[in-house]
Length: 124
Image (cartoon, rainbow, N blue to C red; front, side):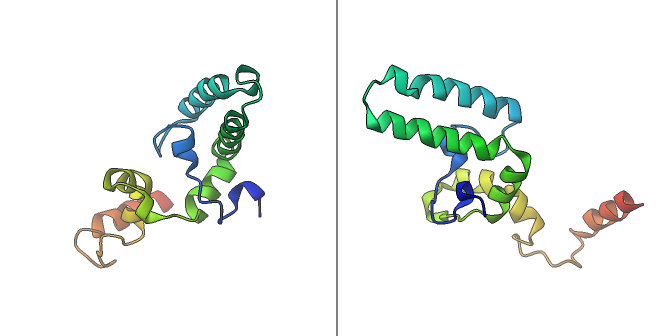
């Protein structure tokens, strides 16, 4: 397992880079550059706290900029649900909520039938 994906770290890389959970690669790159310039150790000579922030920014970017690492982080990250506001929770986990029966809809529900039919058409 990649050390950047350590489940005990409890870091929200999206919050570190100040981007939405469905941010595009361009938005992630732009925010990374902005934050890296702001917190670069050369601008904060001898400030250990600024260096630590800079390292977190780099760690977050190394995961979110790589499609495979980002997918693994999104699917297998250790989430502290109580650390999110309701808006952040719904934004962060919207895909999982809707696709993992998070709404309590059975697979035979009349509401899920059109989705299942769409999936069947995609397979053809």
